[in-house]
Length: 273
Length: 275
Image (cartoon, rainbow over all chains, first blue to last red; front, side):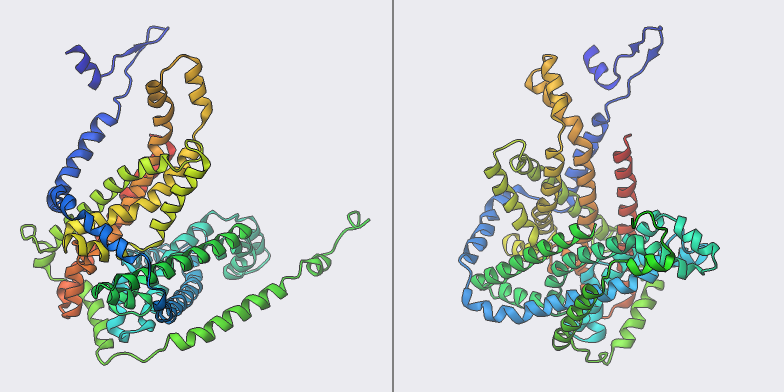
């Protein structure tokens, strides 16, 4: 019994000067039961069943094995949607990143001195940021009609919100010395920002832009699911028709493209920083 | 000689390294890309209903269907959908983390031989390249539509990022601490208990919580492919132009993501600075 008691209430340590110190309870003793409880509760809600997993899990590997070898003849059908996907991400990233610059200025605590104005811009961008890109694409598809334009707008808006957040945090931590020097010599805040803050941050700005571009290729690849253009359209169609060798080809092309672009982007980013 | 001479501002400006060739090259590159893009991305104007739809969506957020938003008893109303979405993300993160731990240890260069580590890392890279929705579309064919499929999807999709970040932490392990425990006569279990787990635990926890935050966002869109959560009702409501329901669902989604983000950021900054 004494042992169990000690588990929950560690023995006090007596210091050499006679002072008693009560060690803190190991947080694992209350974190673990909470985690187990939430896990069981979640399994209940999501109707998690090991029986289904054991009975049907094999099916996943059957699907994967049917994709190998991929149908290489299908490659010619993949090229066009792939380029469309790439173009959606390039243009979307470009527009989003450029628009994010003034928004980041307006959201920065050190640059924008109006609390009300800053609060409004921050609130708008953090609310927009919560909307997943697929939801945005769905909404824009209804507004602009199906096709790559809706996807591009969705990616641009998504990039804009994320880039704003990432970049205003950088502006907040930039060195204000040169900025104040320019202010005192008569420049206005925007001129001083452009001439004293941005030169410190251009490298990180380009690096973030490339990082967003990497993410956006993966995002653009799924937009076809809601009819917003790109490689997702044929992926969804081939999966629905269960033509798995074609699916394998699409996934292979997607994988190679993502890996090539990630590697180029990482090399450039290493040089930028 | 040059360094002794005092430079004027004019001279410094003239001596600045010339970057215009690079700038011209990058500009040309983007002009070419935009010209190609022009063939692929065409603006066909708004649809007939476009403006009305945009106005309705904006209006819907300020006039949501209150019954739908605050109905705590029905399994098809917003509160339960949010709970389900969170549960999917939570289970997906837990399972993904549990699977990632052995994979990460078996792919760390300081634990296993180099060739084995590179095999593990390649598998992780392959898992990471595919968007979560792609896994969702595949798992739908395995376990049928429903929240369970969402859990499986997120479990697999999480492995890529979690394992990658775990490997970085494991490869940063300080061997000095373990050597010190060794020298003071600890056995293997004690070395793991006092030398390895304390070094890894807070970083692992931080990674898992960060992934949970991402998974909540994914769980909201997985519903669109039929894998449970708030996504499916949202897509149906938008396609059926039931604007007040759309408003309720969007408000729920925005609040959920904001709350999870805030809590996650708070816990992670606590973990990083030490409790």
